[in-house]
Amino acid sequence: MKGISLAATILAMSFAAHANMTPKVIYGDDDRADVYEVERSDLRELADSTVAMIPSAKMTERNSIFTLKTKNFGTDYNLCKSGEPYYNQPTAASCSGFLVGEDMIATAGHCINESTCGSNSFVFGFKMNNENQAVTEIPSSEVYRCKEILAHDLTNNQDFALVKLDRPVRGHRVLTLAKSAPSVGTDIFVIGHPAGLPTKIAGGAKVRKQERGYFVANLDTYGGNSGSAVFDARDMSVVGILVRGEEDFEYSSEKQCRQSKRCENGKCRGEDITNINYIADAIK
Image 1: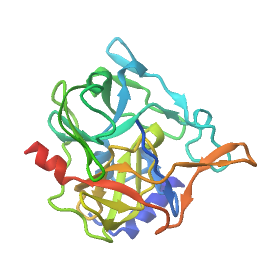
Image 2: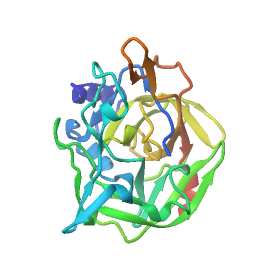
Image 3: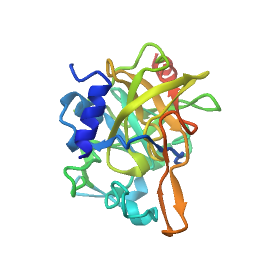
């Protein structure tokens, strides 16, 4: 059902011819989908260039295989089981990131800095294989360490980091960065790890407004999506880095549990996305 919903969203977005944790939220319909639910190979390829940022202490290695130490999403977050998507999926990521150079990852500035560089790993392939099976055993070839921080800023208008990895990345495509900021009304989508879950693709969003250094949109994102690549739906270029937004969950005193906060499209504060030009300039 989720895959059908995303397919409809992508068609509506008109590109079917060629989809330290800061709070986020669901706007309108929940447009998130797992990678296995998405039929389009170009979207899956973009997801393949996404990384989960995971504390190295939450991973164990044996025979060149890293096993992720995960928690159950629903129970760990004390979620209301009824109507909460992904309740039984594992969580592991603290933030998201994406490949912008042979040995460079872009993410949010609040996710990593010089003091935490050495304690974090960047993991390709943390996703769901099907409805019930998550990839929690990762080949060592898909796990990279932070070598140094090449660029970093964390201010009201700017929130980004450019990370140099311990070695060049093999088998994943460097993403294309947009040459200019998206205009208001541009169709966009995001790929990352909401609440630390396996990779999700979420479309059905538009740019609400441009601010100095960032823009605001109605993307369906959560904590853990910080550092996610936000794409222009027309040409699949990266236009920004998801950094902050509305609160994730609301507590139900009647049910004694938490549930995802939902806002009508155009309502609530929106999600903030750092313009990608800061990363492009840092790479130059």
